[in-house]
Length: 115
Length: 116
Image (cartoon, rainbow over all chains, first blue to last red; front, side):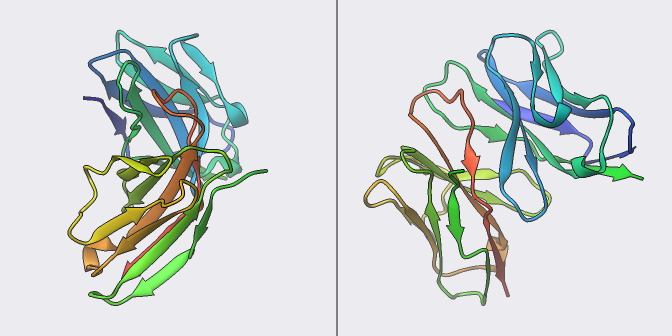
């Protein structure tokens, strides 16, 4: 079975500071990993995905994530936070060789940006 | 730009009443999902359709919840009777193709349910 754990339900950074949102996964098979963003009262939007190609994945809005198998991590980073980055971020996983196509979401991290 | 349409956006109902949510996925998307998102938590899969067939409804409380996708296009999720614990955002998502998921899910804006 697959699962993800997001460390920190709420992260607050200053505008222009580094953003780091942590995600650790558990999977019995090589995983595919995703980060989604959710703005207030909206659905989720894909930021980036890892599907066993390059371990450093670049996404939209300047975000990137690095797959580290040894640490079972897929942390999301952005060098310089912008006010518009304030949102809820969800890490998600699916087993790459699973016959199912069910994506499992973490509990989310709310990112706040201080002026 | 093609979008997943959901209605209603907001629904307030009293417990024991019936409620229904509608979803129209992006045209051509064979796979459709209904997720429930309780405030402060991640989305939890309720039911997955491949065309008109249910692929996974293991987390759907079948005593009160039902879902259908009769013609393999739009879908309806029904709750009867509603309970206080059903208050949540109900999200619909769709994707192209079938099989192992490698691409993205496209989400609608959701239907927020409040049960009084």
